[in-house]
Length: 372
Ligand SMILES: *Cc1c(COP(=O)(O)O)cnc(C)c1O
Image (cartoon, rainbow, N blue to C red):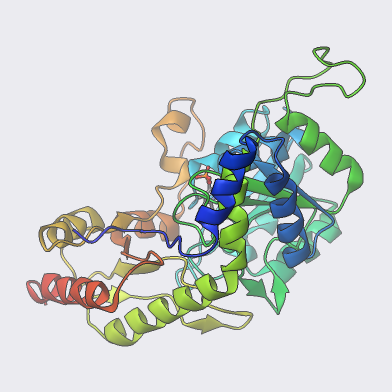
């Protein structure tokens, strides 16, 4: 079975991990954490970086650091991972959802303004699958209405928008180093921002809100969301390979694209759009209406051919956990609904071989040939 995502760990990972073990520095107090933070801050062009346990933790800390609360609303795409929504909902703030674009598979920024109310505090932009969100209109709206921009750049490490690094826009940005991201630490995440006070709040929230002057006395509740030195050691080694990882992702994506472009029954994301080249975090496809099955059935057929594919996100407005709370009643987001039912992605890991890619493409073609 071709795995949907196998990471590539062929740099200094072992050397740095050995240093952790030989020196005994395995907790978050080890030196690799700060080195990894500084490397990321400098690369993205931000003043502060706060390493955390995972990308979802980065979002939790971000929402808390911004002091969101029950009077606030935050605009997010409905087609995203639950982590974006749960971070907001846990502060008591309300979600306002926006549909996606059928071409870039990213948040439709033209639909943001109609979601803005007098309670709106923030817009969360989530760069999805390989192309960034169209950030300029988001930043313009934020300026016009006095809103905070949160960037979820988990899938866009090394991607740029109009030549500027993703994760450098807005007030605060979040990254994930889960095993399928461009930098993989197994589990890991990071928060980047420029504001000193916001960074200090995020650092404190990551570390149980210990007070520097008197440990074990707390004025606020935080989390233990620290990143270990072991994770950071792997992270730094992966960071050293980031440009190669990004180039490899683009190479894999473009090869898939050249083998599948024009095949009847499927829609692909563009190789490039007006403001960015696709980084192909994953290679996705959407079955069009000529294919009489949905993505789940298609994935089952691919699995029989030894290819594991993964579905697109399930929209936030159709999440049982939110429907049980009576949220989003009667709201419809047709593009995201279609993507969730008809979209999936092919094996896209950095360790993918050409032979595995060819097998995946053949499986897709054979699957489609049974219908078309
Ligand atoms: C992976 C991912 C996350 C969550 O990161 P974890 O490290 O898995 O918690 C958040 N947002 C997006 C867009 C992601 O792709």
